[in-house]
Length: 335
Image 1: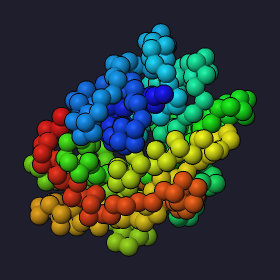
Image 2: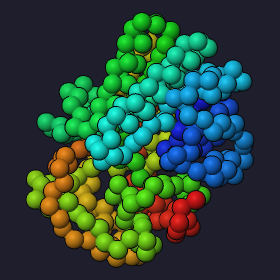
Image 3: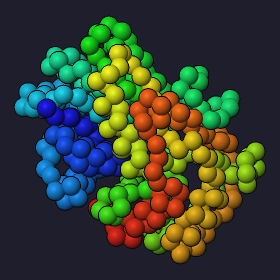
């Protein structure tokens, strides 16, 4: 029996495919490659010494996606495929609602048709918006402040309703915090489209000479040094969380929600210093005003995932910086 990984050629998806193959699963990947490269999957096979099956397909296209279900014996689905830029979602909300929700509905309809009942969903800490307190627990109110986060809440609600309607359907909703890092081999990593939206790839591209200077948005927050604090999790730890969640679906009934983070906050300036130590490079930066929609601090309470999944983060901040730098130096222009 195989696991269908939608968006499996992407950053988190490709690392999860490595974990799945190394755990002995048969892996089927569906990806339309609009935000990813086929080369990532070639390298997944190189790292693991195992083959996967790839379909260049948009899961919103029902006939194309149904071919995947017809041609494979699928036991479960890990669903990464989605548009993911917060800023772009604000400027093009209809595109985000149309893509992220309708594609998921198509996928779920085909799962019902072919009696596939295990689903792991790539959600996000953006569903919490600006939390009243930290660390954030799974039962905190949901109040996303952008269309991207809203699409995650809507899909979560769809999955909860489906679990109530079909008592055989089981779903794990994984709310990620801030994935960083790369595979220790340096063969797969994060390759953002255009100018990076996230802190770590922006820093690595400065260090390798592709960008000039980092803008730090705000230094007057009520944090350790005035800059924003986030929960950065190594992508390998995050990928392993999906394997644990997939196994947990054999035990649970209905829907379960898990935060995947370290439970530790790191400020922007702390990240810069850690990366400078790991790389030996100086990262020039300037302080700019606060960016609309940013919050002072956002980090997880990962206790539920630890208790129920056995999830722990093995990689620390030095590992995150070192692996990010190795990926960027070995692949200065990405794949």
